[in-house]
Image (cartoon, rainbow, N blue to C red; front, side, top):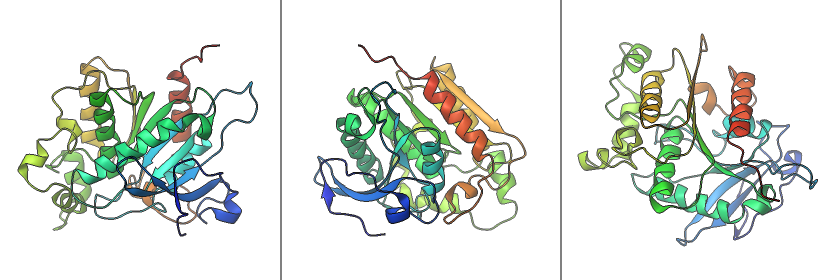
Length: 295
């Protein structure tokens, strides 16, 4: 699907039957290109619509990053998670970030976040709150953009959602070794080599958020991972570090769920393991982090 012309304001969301991807027939989505403050033009796919009735609370707005181990992936690969977030009541802006070395993907994500925050009322209703989300490599980018937003004191975030986040460039955890077995190649190791230009990048908190020395003042975090997931150990370790920093963290481990995170990245119509359970986690998280809108 070709993106529309660059936009400085949110486009109307068309019926998916006319403009959405085939993988999400029940979704309301539209592709467009955003002209962000840096001058960059960023392709995005928008899902959902704002509440029409004034009595209805504003929908959460989620800036979403697809996975692909930093070497592959596009808006179609992000459809599974974005549609799940939409099904939980959110308006989602899924980002086609550049598959280039650090820091460009993080910088692009932050520019889109600022754009979304400026237009949040038009996207999702008055008082809409903004979240970050991502799966696998996208989970790393979501966490990094969250750190950048904190350091810049803008924009305020209601929360971040990390699904099987790819956080450890050492790729040596027990869960990852068990998942890869005796394979001679590792897509995650190759991905980190593509993303990090050198050892100094691995020390930067925006490149490797799990290594950040200061985690205070980050927003509430929801982490979802499978018990046999290659990313299990690094996700659980990051959750523990966030909790130790005194932050609000929910870490849910799905038991006996196969194909995570690969199932989150598939294109085309398919049933994602634990989709209903993940959506329930999303709904609970949105409800728990919702702030009352002053009258």
